[in-house]
Image (cartoon, rainbow over all chains, first blue to last red; front, side):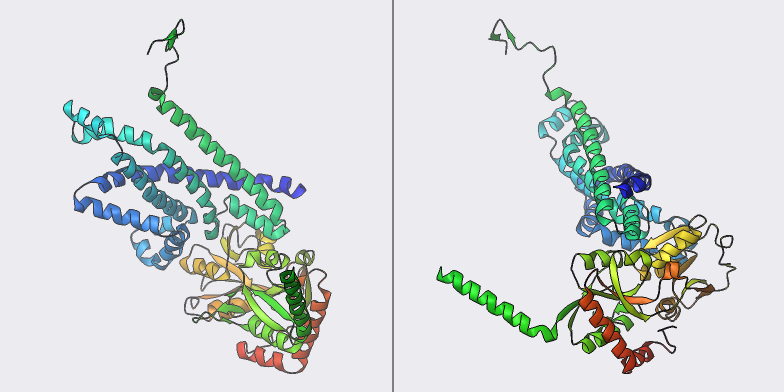
Length: 240
Length: 258
């Protein structure tokens, strides 16, 4: 028990790295996923094939392989990257990890958004066209807002998966929550205590993420709920 | 009911057979397979190295039927405690910290630790000299403990699952220097193509507080029968010349130490 209290500050420090690398990757990944999804739903093969290939690769290979590829793979092209002035970034494990997580989640998120875009009811699009909207305006006002709303439950899953997948970054020497737990456990041999504590911290943060998504979902689905001042019946007689 | 008797009879027979096969006692040996030249996996997927040959020789001397289990280093003691294997022959140093969890046989080799870095840099191995440097080390090793305890306040410690990954980051320049067993560095890195621009820095480190009393075979606490048989086997291969032959196969000096 004592070892848990002793290691808690270091574990929380690790948890902080886990949280901010997740947040950074989620935000960057989403920014990348929106254009990717738009390319993916395009009917022009020049647009959809590269997007399809990208999504196919990042969904089809293990994240661990992607991390190794970018981290140790970039080490092999050090001179080339140096010439391009990129080595200062690839030199840092944090950059490599955040880049891999971003690219990975962008692939998954793009696929979630593609499904959502294609699930936007045809009638709404027709109505928008009838009102004279087309192209970017149609996407900005009607399709994307609706698609985001539709995608939210699946997207919250993706964020939780990504958060948990960050535990892999300890492999490339980053001191995230898992990394810290491994180092302390290896020294103290208190594997059970350390990993259960790390597990509980992951659990708390995961439910924190889910809570935020629940709030957002609630806020975005106001139009689907009865208004608070709706009158359902007058003197026992239903009004509608 | 008859079926049940049959099952019991078969079970008894199997039990007796297992008892009769005591001569060829089955022992599972845990090793890492990523720590050349002591233990590694060759191109064909076979376990090779000094540890592996020693383990085979010890098994032959003790008349054990041995089977190897490959396990990542930082899980190698938990794996032993969880009975995934019965003994660890993986260049594990006999340290006071580890002795609290497992028992060790007598040592079967003892070599010092050293720092390694790119040739031609000005690197002083001292608290001042290492200030601000990034040092690569394998996780859960005596070298990591030594590094954190002595230089942890001034250096950034990058710890890796395997020694090979630590070398990769030395080559790529993500780490300024590394620390590991001198023989492992010599044969596993300096003698290879990727390590040709690197050299040792600073003195030999062998303070027993961190580096223990050499490398032994770890067994579960209280597994005294196995430990004693292994000790006898180590003594036998030391005296009958088998050890020297294995030593000569890998090194041109004596790794047994004083």
